[in-house]
Amino acid sequence: MKKFKGKSNAYGSLIEKYRKQKGLSRSDLSRELDLIDIPISGDELYRIEKQMKIIKDFELIAICNILDIKLEKLSDVINDENAS
Image (cartoon, rainbow, N blue to C red):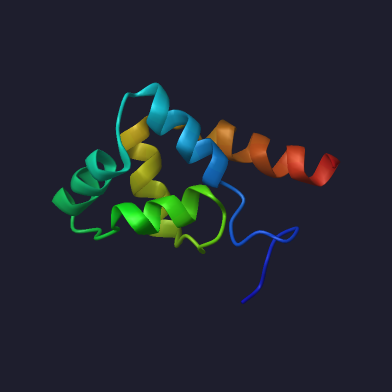
């Protein structure tokens, strides 16, 4: 499995931050994703948030739509990682 700076994805902490800001549990987010036919369990969300699981592009887009994460925030994460 390829990793980005030792992590399986670059966006996990951003997803966790926005999920908590919206007052959603991982189970809540999992249910929201299931409603749009993207089955991701609470356990898988945990692994995504802790950057231990690769996230597919369509999963990331769906999560961003649910959590109201703007594209600029995703770019900021990559720019911050590259600056390190």
